[in-house]
Image 1 (cartoon, rainbow, N blue to C red):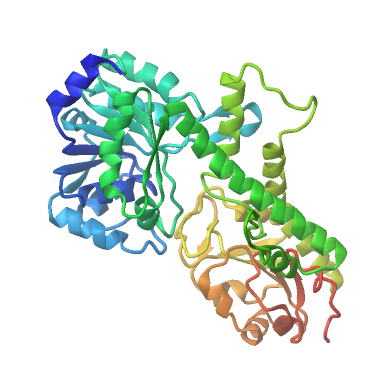
Image 2: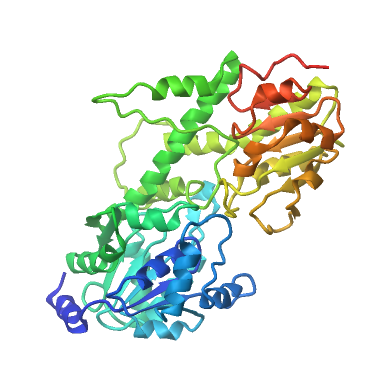
Length: 477
């Protein structure tokens, strides 16, 4: 912290106008909540007028939410803040110069995780736009999940180059990572504790001023910018590790003829003082923007900033191994499919496979890095004919998606459940069998959606992840 920065912040006064760069799953709810705070006068959402996402500008300015799926309260809140003239979306990045604070909510994927080099192209562009129009006394916050060291490193450098200003002297700079999950965006932002880390004390405190008013149950946890970056990447890495642990347990249970859900319930029942055990749910794979790449941000942070890592020589990172386990699960779904069809004398080549669910998470349109894509690719490579149903995902590059489940299931040799959408729990096995027209249709359950016995009793060949107790059942003729 410098006296100069503190003086500039005091001269500028309280934060009144806020810009949010990136109108996606993070930026839209963040902007709406900022706009609903009485002490903030105006929030501008900045979105490129590109062919792929420019449509969001008009929708948002009408108070309509471009995110599909179930997001409780979001469209109502957008309508409210637009009508109150507290929120507007624009492609005019020059208006950043009118803001007191700017938050960046831009994706940070890995093009190739093996080389630990993230694709910061979109983030760099956003930072450069912020730097180009940066003015003394402003606050810049990165909400994107980033490699530890990025805020005080690459981001700081770009902002200083573009603005001619100095971070920590002329403007405040911080990292306040998003901690949201689709389907509960508003609730997560308001109720989860907010990690806030500035490059100095003045930057941290200014970021606290920005985020504290939107919290209801959550509290602010202050730390350094780099510690905040490690916190975010590590919490997602730990979740991925927990999923990998139960996925591997599911594979073990299949091999030993045991129901993994019985085992899971038994493990989860042990509670009491000093017991911190947590067990998640197995499934057909891990998707989304965060868990599929945040491990690599953490690993890269160690390589970039860690000078003396003391670790067993030659041992793999348990976090990277967890990623490999979770990436394997669509392959396991494929293996179950091959095995089930083989039981009735069929091969994948020429078989009709109906996939139920494309989104990576239930009751959402979020189809970023879905495990369903890896499974479908394996099916197609094996010569299967594949049709995909999803009630929420409207489009996906090079994939035809159907909204009519009857159309997808009709004539199918195999049905594979990849997403636990609510309506899949209500499937009528008799109706499904009738639509397939098969004597012994195959059903592969990747999300514990169907009741096995109801299908087995009707002649289905059933296989499910972790269902060692059912996967070798007798086939009813």
